[in-house]
Length: 343
Image (tube, rainbow, N blue to C red):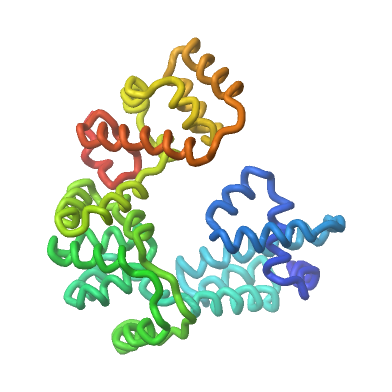
């Protein structure tokens, strides 16, 4: 039973629990979690970890990890069948008190998320529901959906409305609580209740880049070509965010080899300076053993390097990959065009 777990973590702030969890995890897992946080969140969490100078008791650490696992599973159960379904499953392994506490915290979190009731909706039904709305309304809704769901909505809109929605999301920064509540109020009678929300950051170029990464290539190309006629600078920003250097891990081996033919060894060594071990391994396996050894030696003896120089080298390689993808010499996994690949 998990009543002791709840009691051991009572009084601990969420930030303190997060810090204990980071310490309990292996460095790779902790790093992956941190990479999904904002700069401010990383700073707060890092400071809290630094404050944990005393030794964390094993039972407290284990309690935090178990609570995190229980909360994660509860959120999955809610996605599958709602609060009551989650309660039924949790109470099979936890006490009613522990299950209720976890669900109450999750339910409060869900209620604070704008348009949370749309995230469980069938995409086809949701598209039918919002496709005749004003582009500004569609943009606000899409900016709060998961990028995968938003990409499916975007692909189902007319080309003219696609362009309007993309422009509005890309230019969107902060939305007032009043605007969000007004839109939600209009949807309340048909779908769900009004959500109370503090100032919410949504949309922006980063958001639309993530969405376009997931639509099919035809839709993406059509939207960007039309948008480029009106705002070429915005299109360039979107394109640079749609594929970053670390995404080379998604390029097929043949594409990696084609890219390497156009990259000087010195530039490659510079670009790999901050690359993950996984990406470095993928690059090296697509080179001769001698060439890979030369690059590694170059990296080792390069010495301190300005981050801006590394990022510039990475961007030049990304530009090559984007050009090769356009010509069909590179295939990037997960770009929404898997069905177009013929073996």
